[in-house]
Image (cartoon, rainbow, N blue to C red):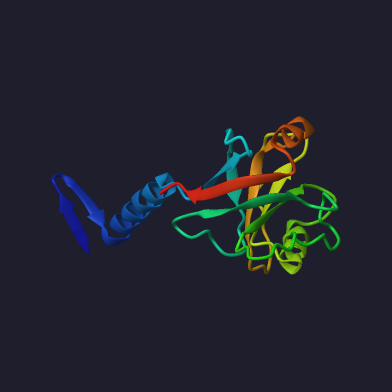
Length: 168
Protein backbone atom coordinates (compact mmCIF):
# COMPACT_ATOMS: atom_id res chain seq x y z
CA UNK A 1 0.00 0.00 0.00
CA UNK A 2 1.31 3.45 -0.90
CA UNK A 3 0.29 6.73 0.69
CA UNK A 4 0.50 9.82 -1.47
CA UNK A 5 1.74 12.97 0.27
CA UNK A 6 1.96 15.58 -2.45
CA UNK A 7 4.53 14.27 -4.86
CA UNK A 8 6.11 11.99 -2.24
CA UNK A 9 4.99 8.35 -2.23
CA UNK A 10 5.49 6.47 1.05
CA UNK A 11 4.86 2.82 1.85
CA UNK A 12 3.10 1.77 5.06
CA UNK A 13 6.45 0.61 6.45
CA UNK A 14 8.05 3.98 5.75
CA UNK A 15 5.12 5.84 7.38
CA UNK A 16 5.32 3.53 10.43
CA UNK A 17 9.08 4.09 10.70
CA UNK A 18 8.75 7.87 10.46
CA UNK A 19 5.99 7.99 13.10
CA UNK A 20 7.92 5.68 15.41
CA UNK A 21 11.07 7.81 15.18
CA UNK A 22 9.08 11.01 15.78
CA UNK A 23 7.28 9.49 18.79
CA UNK A 24 10.58 8.22 20.22
CA UNK A 25 12.16 11.65 19.77
CA UNK A 26 9.16 13.31 21.48
CA UNK A 27 9.23 10.93 24.44
CA UNK A 28 12.95 11.51 24.93
CA UNK A 29 12.22 15.21 25.43
CA UNK A 30 9.92 14.50 28.38
CA UNK A 31 11.73 14.99 31.69
CA UNK A 32 11.64 11.77 33.68
CA UNK A 33 14.52 12.12 36.09
CA UNK A 34 14.22 13.44 39.60
CA UNK A 35 16.00 16.40 41.06
CA UNK A 36 17.39 16.18 44.55
CA UNK A 37 16.84 19.27 46.67
CA UNK A 38 18.59 19.16 50.06
CA UNK A 39 17.84 21.56 52.92
CA UNK A 40 19.87 22.00 56.07
CA UNK A 41 18.28 22.96 59.37
CA UNK A 42 18.83 26.66 58.63
CA UNK A 43 16.64 26.15 55.52
CA UNK A 44 19.53 26.71 53.08
CA UNK A 45 19.17 24.47 50.06
CA UNK A 46 21.29 22.89 47.37
CA UNK A 47 20.10 21.07 44.24
CA UNK A 48 21.79 17.97 42.84
CA UNK A 49 21.16 16.53 39.39
CA UNK A 50 20.72 12.79 39.14
CA UNK A 51 19.70 9.84 37.00
CA UNK A 52 17.09 7.30 38.12
CA UNK A 53 18.12 3.67 38.34
CA UNK A 54 16.84 1.19 35.76
CA UNK A 55 15.38 -0.92 38.56
CA UNK A 56 13.12 -0.49 41.56
CA UNK A 57 10.04 1.64 42.00
CA UNK A 58 9.62 5.14 40.62
CA UNK A 59 8.92 8.12 42.82
CA UNK A 60 5.29 9.21 43.16
CA UNK A 61 4.35 12.25 41.04
CA UNK A 62 4.25 14.48 44.13
CA UNK A 63 7.80 13.50 45.07
CA UNK A 64 9.29 12.06 48.22
CA UNK A 65 10.26 14.05 51.30
CA UNK A 66 12.46 12.65 54.00
CA UNK A 67 15.63 12.83 56.03
CA UNK A 68 18.89 11.92 54.31
CA UNK A 69 21.22 9.71 56.33
CA UNK A 70 24.82 8.84 55.42
CA UNK A 71 25.24 5.10 54.94
CA UNK A 72 27.35 3.21 57.48
CA UNK A 73 29.44 1.68 55.99
CA UNK A 74 29.59 4.39 53.32
CA UNK A 75 29.71 2.01 50.34
CA UNK A 76 26.79 -0.20 51.55
CA UNK A 77 28.44 -3.33 50.17
CA UNK A 78 27.48 -5.15 53.36
CA UNK A 79 24.46 -4.69 55.66
CA UNK A 80 24.11 -1.06 56.76
CA UNK A 81 22.94 0.64 59.94
CA UNK A 82 19.16 1.12 59.81
CA UNK A 83 17.51 4.53 60.06
CA UNK A 84 17.06 5.93 63.57
CA UNK A 85 13.96 4.90 65.48
CA UNK A 86 11.85 7.87 66.44
CA UNK A 87 8.81 7.78 68.70
CA UNK A 88 5.64 9.26 67.21
CA UNK A 89 7.37 9.90 63.89
CA UNK A 90 6.19 8.98 60.45
CA UNK A 91 9.43 10.36 58.99
CA UNK A 92 10.80 8.92 55.79
CA UNK A 93 14.50 8.14 55.69
CA UNK A 94 16.62 8.17 52.54
CA UNK A 95 20.15 6.77 52.58
CA UNK A 96 23.17 8.37 50.87
CA UNK A 97 25.60 5.72 49.57
CA UNK A 98 29.10 6.09 48.10
CA UNK A 99 29.61 4.52 44.68
CA UNK A 100 32.26 1.84 43.90
CA UNK A 101 33.42 -1.39 45.58
CA UNK A 102 30.32 -3.48 44.66
CA UNK A 103 27.28 -3.58 42.35
CA UNK A 104 24.50 -1.00 42.58
CA UNK A 105 21.86 -3.63 43.27
CA UNK A 106 23.81 -4.89 46.31
CA UNK A 107 23.94 -1.35 47.71
CA UNK A 108 20.24 -0.72 47.14
CA UNK A 109 19.25 -4.15 48.48
CA UNK A 110 21.20 -3.45 51.70
CA UNK A 111 19.40 -0.10 51.99
CA UNK A 112 16.05 -1.78 51.46
CA UNK A 113 16.77 -4.48 54.04
CA UNK A 114 17.81 -1.81 56.56
CA UNK A 115 14.43 -0.08 56.19
CA UNK A 116 15.16 2.99 54.04
CA UNK A 117 12.46 4.32 51.71
CA UNK A 118 14.91 5.40 48.98
CA UNK A 119 18.61 5.34 48.19
CA UNK A 120 20.88 7.90 46.54
CA UNK A 121 24.22 6.62 45.25
CA UNK A 122 26.74 9.45 44.83
CA UNK A 123 29.68 9.33 42.47
CA UNK A 124 33.28 9.43 43.67
CA UNK A 125 35.86 11.76 42.07
CA UNK A 126 33.60 12.42 39.08
CA UNK A 127 30.52 14.39 38.04
CA UNK A 128 29.50 11.76 35.47
CA UNK A 129 26.09 10.14 35.72
CA UNK A 130 26.15 6.35 35.56
CA UNK A 131 23.09 4.35 34.56
CA UNK A 132 22.42 1.88 37.37
CA UNK A 133 21.01 -1.49 36.37
CA UNK A 134 19.90 -4.60 38.26
CA UNK A 135 17.77 -7.69 38.01
CA UNK A 136 15.66 -6.97 41.08
CA UNK A 137 14.94 -4.35 43.71
CA UNK A 138 11.89 -2.61 45.10
CA UNK A 139 13.26 0.65 46.44
CA UNK A 140 13.56 4.07 44.79
CA UNK A 141 17.18 4.70 43.85
CA UNK A 142 18.99 7.50 42.06
CA UNK A 143 22.53 8.10 40.85
CA UNK A 144 23.69 11.54 41.92
CA UNK A 145 25.64 13.54 39.35
CA UNK A 146 28.00 15.45 41.58
CA UNK A 147 30.64 14.18 43.89
CA UNK A 148 29.31 14.54 47.44
CA UNK A 149 32.23 16.17 49.17
CA UNK A 150 33.06 15.93 52.85
CA UNK A 151 32.82 19.72 53.07
CA UNK A 152 29.19 19.54 51.95
CA UNK A 153 28.47 16.83 54.47
CA UNK A 154 29.88 18.88 57.32
CA UNK A 155 28.19 22.11 56.22
CA UNK A 156 24.81 20.44 55.91
CA UNK A 157 25.17 18.20 58.95
CA UNK A 158 24.60 14.46 59.04
CA UNK A 159 20.86 14.60 58.46
CA UNK A 160 19.38 16.42 55.50
CA UNK A 161 15.81 17.25 54.69
CA UNK A 162 15.38 16.21 51.12
CA UNK A 163 12.68 16.45 48.49
CA UNK A 164 12.99 14.46 45.31
CA UNK A 165 10.47 15.28 42.63
CA UNK A 166 9.74 14.30 39.07
CA UNK A 167 10.37 17.00 36.51
CA UNK A 168 6.88 16.81 34.98
